[in-house]
Length: 135
Image (cartoon, rainbow, N blue to C red):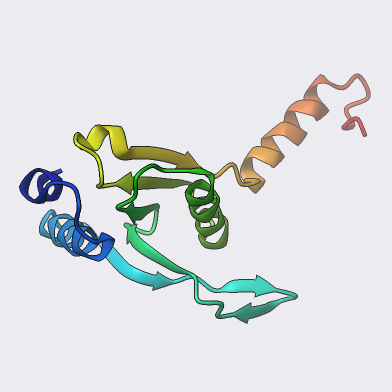
């Protein structure tokens, strides 16, 4: 990552976010910065202050950190964003490391995809002697 190579560790998260945003847009990617992420509760959309650092191509969430170490609370934060956005993949990028490859953590949202549920049901029906799915 050019931003980390040029700036090194030790800056604020907001500085790295701006630089990464600039680099991604320069590559002609659609990037949303500080994207509000509403919480839907009881069929009501609530603005609770959740904001995704960067969302790339509406498919990948980037959570920028400049901390001593990535820990479980950071993972929980990104998993929450992935679920709220119904997004499959996130990256936690901690810029406060000597080599950036050591500061990247991939996070996958294992949300229930209706297509995979339909495939499972169809496979069960085919494999069932009566042709019906098993309870």
